[in-house]
Amino acid sequence: MINLRTLSAFTLALMLSLHSFAEDWPTLQHDNRRSGATSASLNFPLDANWTFKSPRPPQTAWEGPAKWDAYSAQSDLKSMRNFDPAFYVTAVGDRVYFGSSADDAAHCLDAKTGKEIWTYYTNGPVRVPPTIDNGKAYFGSDDGNAYCVDAKTGEFIWQQKPADDDRYIPVNGKLTSTYPVRTGVLVKDGIAYFGASLLPWRNSYLMAVSADSGHLDGPGLFKKVETGMAMQGAFLASKDHIYVLQGRSAPIVFNRDEGKKRGTIGGEGGIYALITEDNSFIAGSPSQKVDYFKETTESGESRDQMASYEGANRIVIDGGVAYLHAKGELSAFKRSEYMALQAEIIQREPDAEKLRKDIKTLKKQLEKDKDSALLKKKMRDAVKSQKLLKDEIDGFIAQLPDCFMWRIECDNAHALIKAGNTLIAGGTNSVAAYDPATGKQIWDTEVEGIAHGLAVAQGQLYVSTDKGYIYSYKGA
Image (cartoon, rainbow, N blue to C red):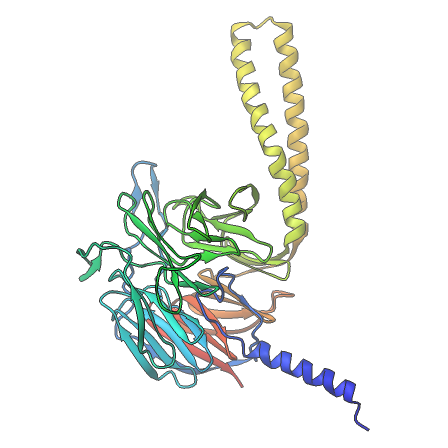
């Protein structure tokens, strides 16, 4: 006899499994938090499904880092505005989408075959992949416009140009608006957000328009003119805030309701950032010289530092576990325990800094009055307090390694995502998959170029490289 209750439970589990397997990747890094994490699964081993090769590789907005910075006397610098080194993809249903800086268009491919379904040309490079929402595809262009087209057919729906300025400048052999839309288009709760910006000494435009019509009339819709910023790379969004990345300057947070500026937040630059499951904001790096992430509270009113990740260049947080690539290693650690220790360290840092300054001052005073018993006592007390505080901090630092679940050597430092029960890392001419519970490598493949872009949808892995390749892999 068939147990209907057991059958129903089995049917529900099967439906949930199929839903997990078939989840989409509708925007850059999967969601508006740019988490890089999805519940979608992959069946390993993966086999090559199809390859798309652009006639020309990506034409990045910025050539790359300066060879050296004379002002700060730094060399071997890294790029702070590398938001478009590959044709990153989004994928919904049986379609795959990407924007091209080579032919100035948004593209739609058949997910099964990789064949072109439609192409929508603009008058400038499309640097951030289309966001797919409610049957529509949204993207920005260096021609100064944000676009919305039908996701199935590529037919035009609306466009919005934030700036009235029609001037263009030559960049890499092309003409670019003095107010390019290089933020992509973020869609949330029926509102499309994007920015038009180029140089911090010129105006920047922050837009919130109707996702259906592109119009500005209605609650939560606005057009804000800002100064002193350069919007570069994809926006992020939480329930209440929009986050704007700038590259060489700190991210800026705005209120979603009215576009009111709340101040800077997170790290001090870069275009790689994410919002965690519990609404912390992680961003970096503080300079062109080092790899570093700083985690802060998400609130626009209070932005206290919660943790730091020195040497890190990629991070994914999912299910309370943080997966980190830093200094040639890939690791997993218990985030709550790690952050508790970091909180103890950060809490003591102001006192440590105060003691350092007090001791420096006392040394100068003792040089003038070497026989002062009072100054000598103050110095002994300060040095003793400094040692006790240092021992406390060192004790917490010594416990940090215990938070780690595993560590492995890993050269794939350019991209990191989590798909179901798999961690995937992209490197130079290589992509590899790992078991997130143990760090054991379970699959790898060779690609042409640096694998900057990774996405998983409908049981397929997509890899985008700086050579203009988009690879599709699928399980048996």
